[in-house]
Image (cartoon, rainbow, N blue to C red):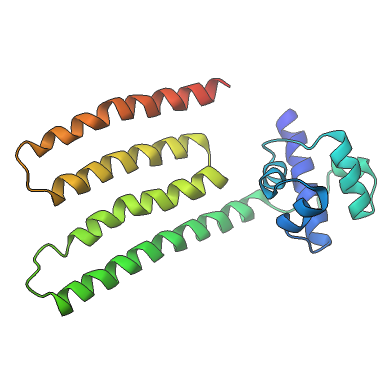
Length: 193
């Protein structure tokens, strides 16, 4: 019931803001709040307090009760928002791979004797994880963030392992064990809250 209520309020907050053609940043400026707070409210992660809802109602020219009413005909679908977030994340990740490909081609054109140009693609993996982690922290679920953190640790260490030609470099993976345990504990700690 509470989830449904939060979803209704979140959808109405988005609907009225978009009807007034305001961005989250513009609305945040009017309210003297951060755009992250606006984003949280519109995702349904939190609700604005009653004083803020009154200020929002005044800005939109509506009653506070209008935020709690189900709007079937104008309801913004959460799946549309999630699809948009996914596409932005994928395009940003593809940009990392485009830059990696350009670097690879440049190595082959200008340094043809360099035989380890393929490492640019190896390093593209942890960089892609960093990009995904940023978007996951903004839009994603906690378990996705935990998975991406784990991938980042293991791919970064693998990149270092493949780059260095040092005796007993395999021991670098021992670093990942306490980090991985910390990530798992952090995930469960966040879940308990």
